[in-house]
Length: 73
Image 1 (cartoon, rainbow, N blue to C red):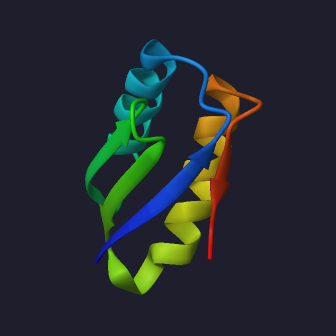
Image 2 (image 1 turned 45 degrees about the vertical axis):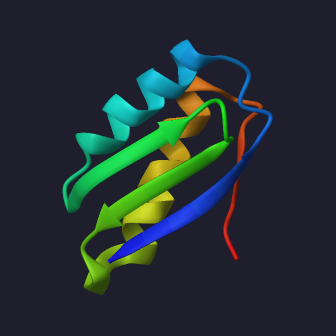
Image 3 (image 1 turned 135 degrees about the vertical axis):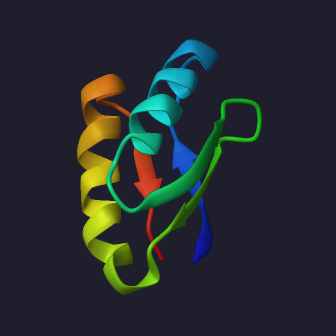
């Protein structure tokens, strides 16, 4: 399942790259992209565990960029 999320307060392209690399290492994530320019994140992950995986993604992103928020609709 692929979903897109808006990011708020992502401050730099380097942080976006670090977030992307960390997300790709999470078990169940097939692919991920984090764009500093568009302030968007795209995640392709296991549909059955998507919410659980998103909780891990939020935790990883907070470690890299504490001020960044992921808008989960």
